[in-house]
Length: 87
Image (cartoon, rainbow, N blue to C red; front, side, top):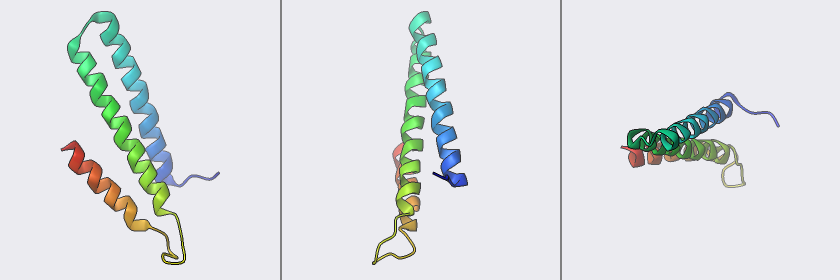
């Protein structure tokens, strides 16, 4: 399976944010820091939004008889929805 550049970047974002989430959670658990726990939750929301963008990228490639060039607008709509939710 060959990934496009945008998919690779989204996967990298998910991986790095997931790694940061785990590190922050472990540090918060062992230190008892509420601030680190809150930051771990914030990083988890970054993982969720990056995963949503990746789904949008993959959905935008789907083609059908009605949309022979693919659902390329879906990627923009998902990104817009994520930006509205995160703000």
